Each structure stands twice: as structure tokens, then as C-alpha cells.
Length: 221
Image 1 (tube, rainbow, N blue to C red):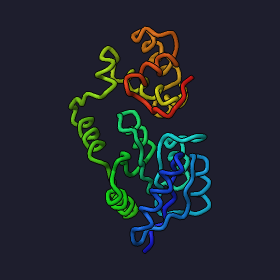
Image 2 (spheres, rainbow, N blue to C red):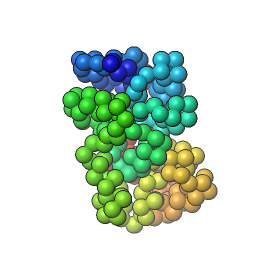
Image 3 (cartoon, one colour):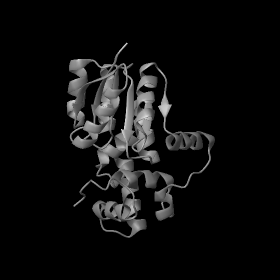
């Protein structure tokens, strides 16, 4: 049985390469390849694929927003995330939204193909680094993140907020991803600005990016 896949990533060459990898595999057919979350939601509605493979950082709708909308319409749709982000904020936002799998870019073609087949058959799939984060979270073990090393004075929640600030997220997006109210996010942002000794959220996000945190492709100016 052929597995029909819709994939989404905002980098055209990456989409091209990923499509080639998937279509070399037997029983996988990429029926659409799109560059933003809005186009992803539209393509899935039109084509009813067996699996969605999506990045998280995309224009219009980000990946988490797209996942939420897709699963509201089709609760059993298998969604596999393939992204550069492996921090707790992105991992758990995607899992809370309902993603069935999470791989970090750098996974080889065989691993991606296996993951597509696994989520199509109903399994959950996590790359090694992501799996270790999930185990550490639920076992209560501490895994020091780049944000913790760079900004030890921040609380774990403040670090999650800062990581999302560094990807260009606005307060309402952070609130949705982390399951908080807008007021709570504003309070966390205020504490972050005080602790980092910066005047505004953009300066905080830039300071985070200078420490290697966040999406380097996002222009915060």
C-alpha cells in the first residue's frame, strides 16, 4: 500500500532533496510539497494524505499552528516533525499539539523513511536526542540546555520563553505553545529583560541568538 505524503518546509532546496529521498523509497509517494503552514493546511484538506511531514519554523502559520489546525479537522492524521529545533520549548510544543513523531534535521534518509512508515502504521517516532529529552523530562533528570548554560539566572520557564522569543514568536504565540495566559507570558518577558539587563524583547532575542539560541534565519530587527 502506497503511503501518500504531504511535506512542508520553507526552504525550496531542502524540500526538493527530501522529496527525492522519499520517492526513492518503495511505497511512498509525495503528493504535495509546500513552503508555509497555510499552504500545508490547504494541501492536506484537498489531498487527504496518509502522513504529513513538516518543519516548525515557517511563514504564515508556523508548524505548531498548522499541526493544531490539521488535527482539529482530522484527529487521527499522522504528523511527523522534521526540524532544526531540538530544545524543550519546540519539542514539547509540537508534542502537545499532537505530532506523532519528531526528528531533527541531520537525520539520514533511511531514518526519515523509517519514521514516515512508522507513523503511518500508528507508531510514535522520536530521534535519539529528542527521546533523551523526553525521558529526562518525565524522569525528573536535568539535561543542561544551551540556554541554561548561557543564562543560568533564568528559571526553566523563562528559558523556554526566551528560546521562543529568539525564533521571532510574539507573546500570543508563546502563550499558545507553552499553555500559558498572555499575562503570564508578559510577566516572564519582563523578568527576562530585567535579568538580561536589556531594554526590550528584541534585544533579549538578539542576545539569545548571539549565544547560539534560536533560529539563525529569523530577522529580529
